[in-house]
Length: 167
Image 1 (cartoon, rainbow, N blue to C red):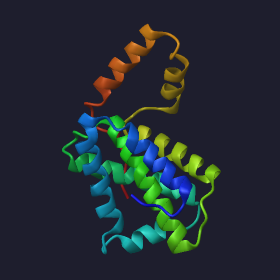
Image 2 (image 1 turned 135 degrees about the vertical axis):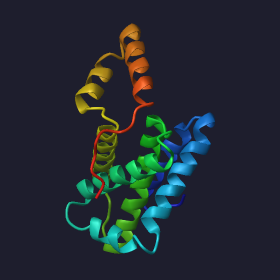
Image 3 (image 1 turned 90 degrees about the vertical axis):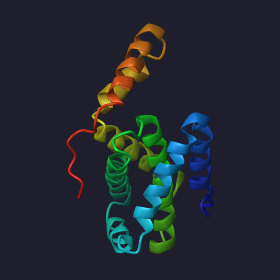
Image 4 (image 1 turned 90 degrees about the horizontal axis):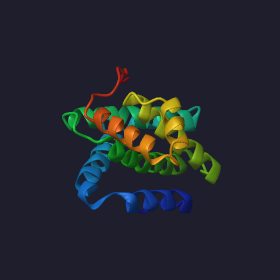
């Protein structure tokens, strides 16, 4: 991956560095699938249209919908951690495209807002609320509670995403 914007480059590199070796193949498949959909000639115009207006919101919503498609194409086997990692990298590609196609300049703040919005949208796709995420963050100091949450999330990763309408 090679982004002109050093902020996007750093984000994507940091995410990719955190992908576990045993999940690398799944991660790469998700990113490649997402890029094929985003940049296919049939969907190129749709991508341009989706970037108009509220860029942060539209990118987050679009990437979430894209992850729903990828999840379905994976026969519902894409894990939540890999889906989140792939979503953030695909978000970087979408923001990079916006910079080039629309003349936008993505700031550190915009990238952070987009990452937060994209993460929230993808978690919602999998039926995980922001409230649940906040509770998990609050439990990090209690290993027993954190282990219970990990077990619950592991069970949830075997479930299908919530009833989201992909448009």
